[in-house]
Image (tube, rainbow, N blue to C red; front, side):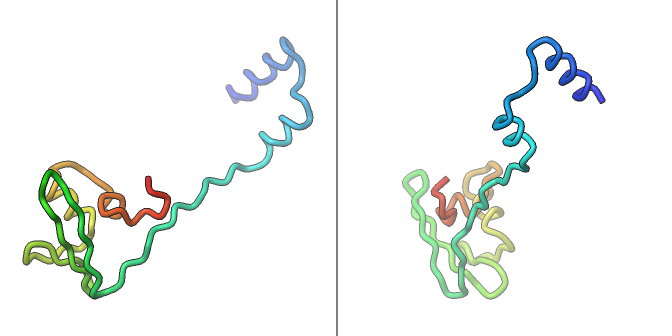
Amino acid sequence: MRHALAYAMQEKAFGKLGRRIARQIAEPSVEPVRQRIATRPGMQLVRSWNDRTISVQVLEEGFLFEERTYRSLSAIAREITGVQWSGPRFFGLDSHGR
């Protein structure tokens, strides 16, 4: 309700939006889908972190890192860095490189 009232006040003070702008606002914005590179059992993920080589093996159900099995890459990234990380991003599996 507040948004509608604010819009009406702006419209009265500054005039209506142009057709092109109004159409852009009315169309739902679509966020780009971030694709991740698929991992397959047997793959070896290697990354350097703080002068240390990190090696993770992809298993059928999880990931093997330093003789321990983890359910997610994010858990391994958190173990390595001590902070919350996106595991796929940490290991460079985000196809957009972000």
